[in-house]
Image 1 (tube, rainbow, N blue to C red):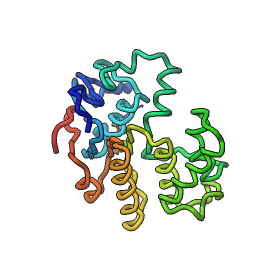
Image 2: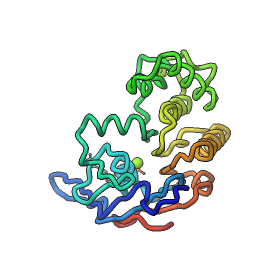
Image 3: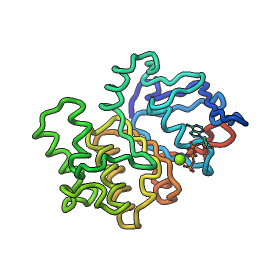
Image 4: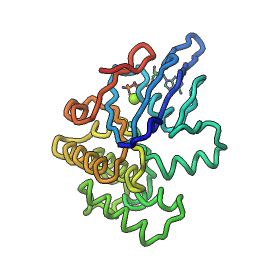
Length: 229
Ligand SMILES: Nc1ncnc2c1ncn2[C@@H]1O[C@H](COP(=O)(O)OP(=O)(O)OP(=O)(O)O)[C@@H](O)[C@H]1O
Ligand SMILES: [Mg+2]
């Protein structure tokens, strides 16, 4: 845990609406949320309530209509797009609800992408990617094209890709949604280990009670606010 009083991440009065032709739906309504360095948090809430939208905002992929997002006191949306993209690639790991792997590429190539974007050396990138695929139990699937993998295997490739840069922050949207109990448990262990090994902060949206119970705290999204669950 960081000893400073500045939270690692802070959402201040963040609001977000979506507008269709017939309605405006309020997803976040002047909500505040503070995350400490090294903390693990489960986000729960009913379907369509805005959990994925919240993760996208925390991960700077989506902008709030109003309010601020601070990383260690810095207003990220004040950065230009290029600097923001660089920050995101090196500091934040995403596991999306729908994993968005690059079709036509192998598992290891997908996991190598963040390192390539960051301009790291090829040998290191390859070693790190292979190591992370082993940790999610895919050592024998490294050179398979992702479209030839099962749904759960693809999800594990996405988890490996999110973790390969050892991000300060992992945002994971239903990371075990497609996994059986054994593979879910190995993902739980991996998240726990990485949290302990290098103080990775974890925010995970999950319906998996076992995973939620392992987190330091659990919050619910309800009526546009983030509240203790
Ligand atoms: N780009 C968009 N344009 C319009 N409406 C959107 C957009 N993205 C999300 N929404 C709407 O916002 C609401 C919240 O969506 P979100 O995906 O954040 O929910 P969720 O809590 O993650 O749901 P689930 O548990 O089903 O994944 C939904 O009603 C959705 O239809
Ligand atoms: Mg969602």
